[in-house]
Length: 341
Image 1 (cartoon, rainbow, N blue to C red):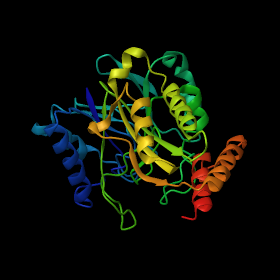
Image 2 (spheres, rainbow, N blue to C red):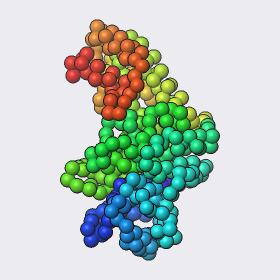
Image 3 (cartoon, rainbow, N blue to C red):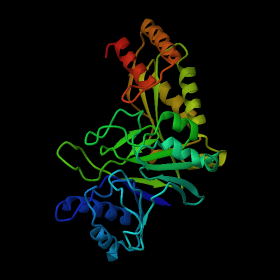
Image 4 (cartoon, helix red, strand yellow):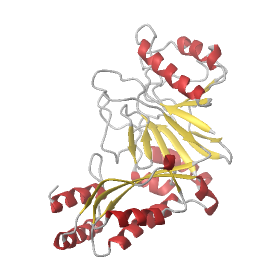
């Protein structure tokens, strides 16, 4: 079963901002073309100043959209939105955190509407036992504080999600609203606003589709031309796969995208190792590992330096704070310095 997800549409009146309704219509057009009948809005469907929901309700009741199921997860701009205010039968507002299941076999989705002065981790903890040993998806509205971006229109931290939360509760996929720029940071994804709110929000727009009959992984790896380069790479891959926490029966459902960065002594051999290590899984859209940011380096002295730097960085007790780089980003920048790029 496929589910479309968007966020941060910030509807007011069609008269004031017709382009925002057109963006929503565009999403629905593509959904229906692809046979998708469920749309999740991960917060900030409305502008906070909007108190008249009749226009949106009439929109959902249009004949062409009657078969669409709208699931609204309120964001910080939707403090008053509730089921009492929208009577359309195909609209559901999730005002309190809770679980829904989709697909076959069932995949659990935890929905977290925005709660002021709350952290996502403390809300997820109430459902920890229900997720033990199973695959689940988190959909909410707030800040992934390990990322490098914030919402420039709203300074401060909004219902944060941390790396510790991900390591403790192990969601397979996280989709959040609040950041208007489309972002993908590991397993955390922001669909972004489908319509820019002002001239500062540049670039193409999108919406996301979750296929609950597949399990998607979008991973990155860093390679260094050490003496034990192959062992180093295979250990990285093994660690990634272990963190997926998938059962043998789920391997056939995996769709994988891999991007590799860094330096190697043999690019052809690198591709062979990647294909061999991931041979049990399918690559997304029949693609292959992306080696566009891998460079060939055969300087043995620099390779020795790179190996030592990598080991020293790994030893760091790195308490990553908001807007600070990960260990992987530090290593990649160090490699560029070592090799003079």
